[in-house]
Image 1: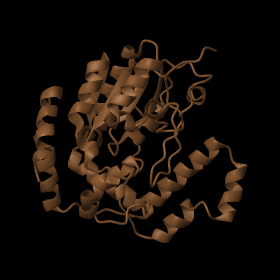
Image 2 (image 1 turned 60 degrees about the horizontal axis):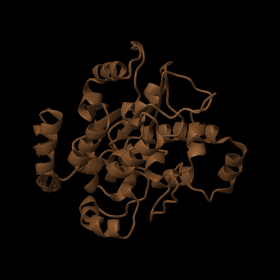
Image 3 (image 1 turned 180 degrees about the vertical axis):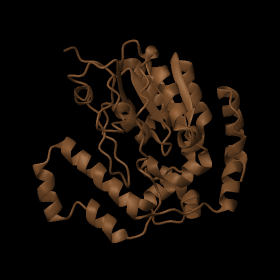
Amino acid sequence: MTQRWPNFLIVGTARAGTTSLHEFLGNHPDIFMPLQKEPCFFTYVDEQPEFKEARHRYLTNPAEYLAMFEHHNEAVMGESSTPYLYFHQKSIANIKRLVANADEMKILIVLRDPSERAYSQYMHNRRDLREPLTFEEAIDAEKQRMADNWHFDFFYVDKGYYYQQVKDYIDNFKHVKIVFYDTLEKQPEKLLSDIYQFLGVTQLQEAKMVKRNQSGEMKVKWLKQMMTTRKNPILNFFRKLMSRDTKKKLRNWAKDKLLRYNLKKTEMNPETRRKLIALYSEDIKQLQTLVQKDLSDWLRV
């Protein structure tokens, strides 16, 4: 079988329901989405990225990346990597360099209120016991963390300047669909219908989308540590007996159970939101003109 590049990418943004969308769309008989989300290939092809506080395995070798799509001939072949939106210039350049007819690739962008997205990213890191600072302290530390080569998961504020990110995709691809997290939360059936139409596949009426990868504060931190540590000899023994796909499925199942019963939601300080809105205000106004959608809710405290 001839090796095939994907013809569909979910490029972000992070913390906007892309994990749920990836899993849901992958269940459609005419859509293939690989088990691994966030391979980040087009951002880091032929590189060896190293960051402080990194924990993710990226696919940077073309052969390894293409192997994800071997033995599949679905009409839609896709993957999801949220850094593609944030690192838009680099990712777009690599897509166009490597993929024949790249401008025909279908691009899905999911956007979320940038202030809420920043806080959700922070709480995601708190959930995973990676972030020791308060949200306000982390915002103040962000520029120094960027200079010190921290992982981009800690760039809470900087990721939310969407205008240029979105514009670059619109300027470089013929088929770009922009959807919004609020619609995913409040009208998932309508949003999924729009996405099916965009992808040119038959709509499935009976399927329901499950929320994945939710953020929040862990109620019992030692339980999270026990399940995710790489220093537990018993867990490591069983990990060695499993295939990579099996480990991924088991990890997703365990994470889902852990988050369902061990997660506590917290709210952002209104004064902090006010400060973030002041930072994002001009970018939001440019974005709403670009996408022709009223985004005034993002400017409300």
